[in-house]
Amino acid sequence: MAAIIATFPARSDNYGYLVHDEGTGRTAAIDAPEEAAIVKALEENGWALTDIFITHHHGDHTEAILPLKARYGATVTGPEAEQTRIEGLDLTVKAGDSVVLGDTVFHVYATPGHTLGHIVYHDPRGKALFCGDALFSLGCGKMIEGEPVSMWDGLKALRGLDPETKVYFGHEYTLANARFALSIDPDNTALQTRAAEAEALRARERPTSPTRLGDEAIANPFLRADDEGLAAAMGLSGRPAHEVFAAIRRAKDGFRG
Image (cartoon, rainbow, N blue to C red; front, side):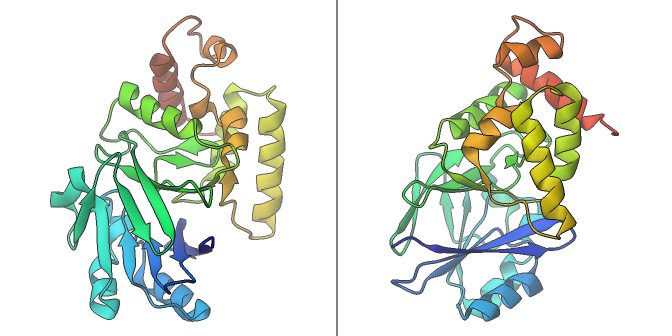
């Protein structure tokens, strides 16, 4: 039986997610951005929190860990490499490990770059990827702590998952990401379609999460750094993909469109 996923807004632009296993009644929050938003979502669905799965150490993904533990007694799982920076962890995991929630088994992938120990949780049977700030709709997280080679390798590994995978990301940045993507890849018809769809969703105050991984693979420039056409657009024909990725990331960091 597939898990039930609830998506809700938190803070100013975060997304919160609850994953509920009907067979056991266990419910996990993916990251802990805001206590009130998570409690509200739990109460609206009639669920009790049993687990919290953390992707990385930033406060807008961890600040509600301790109050949620105090309220529900939830078990908190997070990245081994960042355990000294996340208060309240009970269990740590690394790339290659698995996390079990009832009948759902999440595979853990390392996605360093935004933070050095950033991880994501992938449910291959349910075709769901919870990626925190590693990957966004039409974008990716800022490379705050990492470097281009490992960040590109992590994102490329995610790109290789089932294209029908739904990508649940940490922030509503899609319109800004679309504007940048179009500035460097204006003739990409898949990107044009995605940008129009995002505009329509946000005009109705609807979330752009989740997105389909196969759509990201052909529209998101950060997943296309090994595409020669995009490399040429960046003035880097024939250069390694990680150099193209780094150039795209720098361009996005400085973009004011």
